[in-house]
Image 1: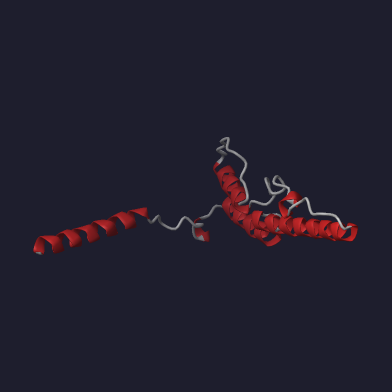
Image 2 (image 1 turned 60 degrees about the horizontal axis):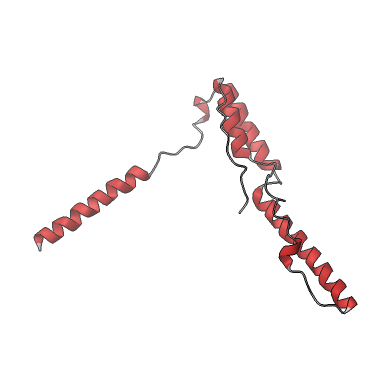
Length: 132
């Protein structure tokens, strides 16, 4: 009984240590007193980007869905007026590549800007992001 309780206690303590090891310190921006003028300019650009950014993944998906729905509804009306059978589906009006590359990635722009402040921009090849 005592051995069983000790095992549960040790398992609980070990689990807490494991979980706290997974928690990373806040990777947000450092307080402004620690930022160089270049980094402060990057933060200002991030704020401006977030304020005017409209073509991000979420907005692109919403616009694409709305556009597909309008096209499909137009098709439904045309087929109804003609008295013909429906041969298309809603997904026929959805362009799968439409939101493949959005033009608004403020966080990536901030990362490049911060790297440029240090004088070295790290580049690596990676596939284009996909909106899901």
